[in-house]
Image (tube, rainbow, N blue to C red; front, side):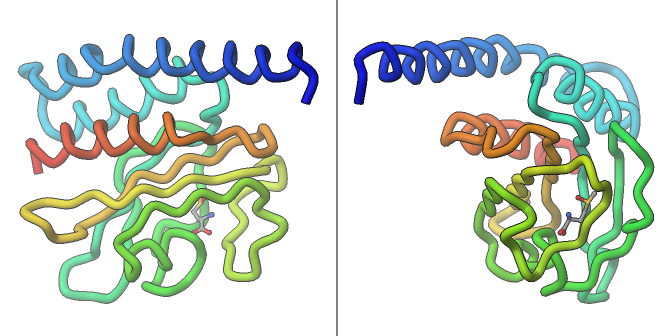
Length: 167
Ligand code: SME
């Protein structure tokens, strides 16, 4: 590969690493604020959507009581019809069962995918654990094709570990 291409890849990686590091204290300050849990969750969604250029929809889904389904909690971005998602359905429903991060570089290549908007090109879902139990997830939609790297996964795992403290 040409040296110029390689250096652009490094610059991009470095840029996002700096951005995510800068967001860590802001996420923690929201969690540690005096606000209610609902306001904190909403503030986290708004912060991520506003500050990360490739995050176009940011939301949290949670296990709906004893049912094998997810229910939409706080979100930032366009309203979605998919406020309830059964386990196993879509990217979110699969993560509810697998307990693993799911990075989708191209949503059109997925069979088991629930479309929220035609503008969405990629998605990342990271499970949220409380005392080792998968009780929900953070879901990010992007209008940019193939935008997510390991840095997004690490950052969203951090966000979820902070959110777990107030659940
Ligand atoms: N695309 C998700 C559905 C939720 S929307 O992205 C808000 C899925 O396939 O599970």
